[in-house]
Amino acid sequence: MGKILPLEELLKVLKPFRGKKKIVFTNGCFDILHAGHVHYLNECKKLGDILIVGINSDGSIKRLKGKNRPILELPLRAFVLSNLCAVDYVVPFEEDTPLKLIEAIKPDVLVKGGDWEIDQIVGKDIVQSYGGKVLTIPFKYQISTSQIIERILERYCPIKGQD
Image 1 (cartoon, rainbow, N blue to C red):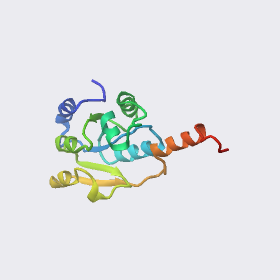
Image 2: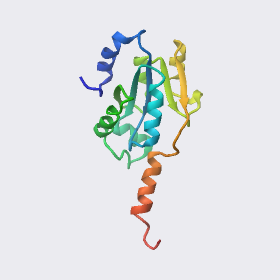
Image 3: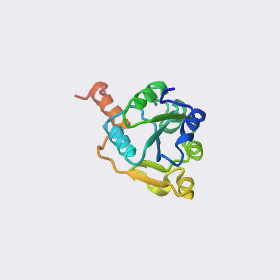
């Protein structure tokens, strides 16, 4: 069994750890993995014993980010994430938010990046209802996949007539 699991399989794997290990959950697109992602995931891992990363499906990303995204397809993004030391499990989801995953996994800690206000975090009420924590992690690196795409386009696809 690998680290990339559908929800049903993940729940089976987690069952023996309930109440014995602290389960941390975060989610995102992780389209082009960069230093900001790696720092963030390492910090998430420090908050518990098992780090689960929910990863948006290709269709979900298209709905959220536009028709030209994702750059990398789900199998590639999930493979890269699953090979980071900090990440214990990767679980793909089709919906636009990870609410269904959070309801099923019931993490002890729900984490998002520092650009999220706690009140805006999907699943906050669920996690807090059973005594779980909802946290944000400040950015160490001011970089995003969208910024990387912009840089590539500016450098390698300049508008004709501009030098």
